[in-house]
Every structure is written in C-alpha cells, then in structure tokens.
Image (cartoon, rainbow, N blue to C red; front, side, top):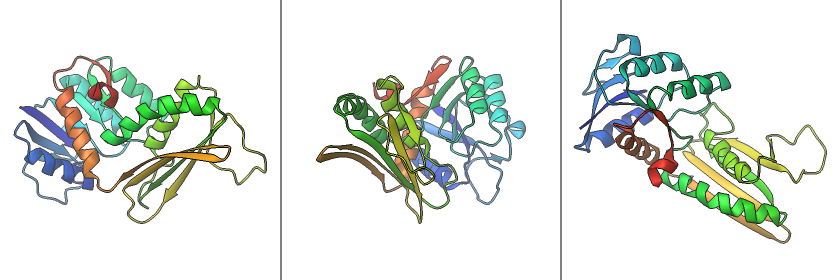
Amino acid sequence: MTNIILRGCNGKMGQVITDIVDADDKLVIVAGIDVTQNRVNKYPVYQSFTKCNVKADVIIDFSTTNNLEEMLDFATQKRIGIVLCTTGFTKEQLTLINGASKKIPIFRSANMSLGVNLITKLLKEAAVILADAGFDIEIVEKHHNKKVDAPSGTALLLADTMNEVLNNEYNYKYDRSEERVMRSKKEIGICAVRGGTIVGEHEIIFAGTDEVIEIKHTAYSKAIFAKGAVQAAKYLSGKSAGMYSMSDLMD
C-alpha cells in the first residue's frame, strides 16, 4: 500500500485524484494540504506542511508554486518522494527542486499525460528530419481562461524537446507584434490562447514549402493528468534519490 499526501487536495485536480485513489486498492490518501478548507474529505486536511505530522510514502503536488520551500523541507526531513505536477516555477525555485532531488526522489513532468509524453518521443525524430529540410516550427497551445502561466509548461516541454535534438540552436519567439521582420529560420514560435473551459490543446506545426505537417494533442478531461500523477506515485514509491520523469515511467 502506497500512502499519499495530496497537496492542493481541495482544488479541482485534487478532487479528481481523490476519486481515482479511492478506486485503487493499492493506494490511500492519508492527508491533504490546502490553504482552503471548503470541502469535507475522508482524510485530514492541513493548511500547511508545518501542521502535518502524518507518515506517508509520496507527496502528490497539484497546487501552485507558492510555499514550495516549505514542501521541500518537509519532504527532505521525512525522506518522502514528491510527484511534482505544478508548472510555472522560477529559475530559483527550479534550483531548489534540483537540490532536493539529491536527497529524495522527485518525479517532475510539465505534463502528466501519457499521450503528450509519447508525442515528445515522436518530435525528437520529426524535428531532426524536418528542420534539416527547411521546415519552420510553430507551437500553438490553448487553455482555459483561469490558467495564469503562459506559455504552458507543456508547450515549453515540447519546444525544449525539439531544441535539444537541434543542438539548442533555436530561439523561442513569443510575440511578433513589435517587430516587422521576416521570420528567422532558427526559431520556434510559441503562441498561447486563453479562453473558456479549454482543458488543454497543443499543436506542433512543421511548415515547409508547399506542405504542412501537424502533430496535435487534445485533453478533454483533467482526469488524464490525474491518472498520470497516480501512476507516477506508484512508480516513485521506494525509489532512491534523484530526478525522474514520464520518460522513466514509459521505458
């Protein structure tokens, strides 16, 4: 049995994860962490890790970038692994996360969807072939109107995946409105759309001479991300210190 502390338990994703764990006889949520106390859960909920003294194997974090250091301190002291699903971290926060991974196992992915992570594998081959053939690369991502970070962590993940196999020679272009210049060949355009209740859509466009290739992923429900987080928690339990990702889970 894997014992889980769920950070952000009273949010929409937290409640989806709660339902998934309830249906799995190999997992149990032993405590929740949330600044809001607006729900009744089957497990105790604390406003911060400083007030929690519950033993667990893994923390699933589907909240915000706030109070990251508090969670890392708690996890390293208790030697608990973290499935880190939150995006939008600063460079300073990423440094803290990498430092903590030397003491505890941390599973970090900009997107917990199996489909998105399969696409990253496809993009590695496509980018090498198509960039060499002169194709331009653009990414269009769409999310609901309550998402605060832009571009999405997944869009950056996709761009970074391609840039790595292209020797990191490409720059990212987020806005074309202030310059009246031709598009550079060594750039990846990234456009963010925010509106309505769009769960998540990412389209990678390879535009060549007289032909266009598009690779697209659409999320119709938050459940796909919650399922990935739960699978990651199972995978991470008992692992040694280090940084893990969906590629480790999929291998």
